[in-house]
Image (cartoon, rainbow, N blue to C red):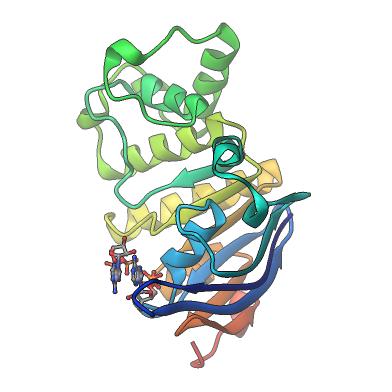
Length: 237
Ligand code: ADP
Ligand code: ADP
């Protein structure tokens, strides 16, 4: 499904953020990416959607070589990859429903006037997703009227609206309290199971990673230092 082959990134500053990182993530698997600050977690996630340009190795999503795509092909690629962010990245003045529908466009529209009318089928999909994340009663509320946990649920529904093949999740619970963090991680895990969806979750909190992922990959100084079942995690990471 997702395959990294000797992925390497050296920034122009000379910082080597990733060194020969290789692993495969099959459909349905939720991977927790852990490691200390500066280990290369964000760089890895950003290489997969080509927000950061790898300097070596290859990345494949299904049959597509991500590292071989021209700039003009990236929009199509990014529609296949759902992104979930730490600070949710919602448009605060738009409604919950409008935010979810913006996932269909593959970008977040700046002004309401840019929101085109969506086909009934897209609206129905968005409503079903809001039901799944427990927010169907809030569809017409503005995003800025929601709690942090509710906002992240909108972020999850928006990522799913484009029917992605892969979820990239960057510190989804960093702004949430412990109980809400567990609820959000459980929701992501359950949804990936239901949809046979692969996910890579960049997560600081090792206990959360152990509780709600299928596999943990530990990075340190740009190298994989652990790759295995959450229950086998030891002090090497
Ligand atoms: P993590 O997400 O695990 O904290 P990062 O991927 O952000 O790690 O960073 C990995 C390394 O790459 C660090 O040494 C960091 O300083 C460096 N780095 C990250 N982004 C850049 C950049 N845009 N330019 C130069 N160096 C960078
Ligand atoms: P993280 O929360 O993932 O550890 P940081 O706070 O280290 O991220 O970095 C925030 C931003 O600064 C990111 O966009 C990252 O790419 C960039 N960055 C990190 N380290 C460097 C660096 N040494 N030089 C330039 N940019 C950097």
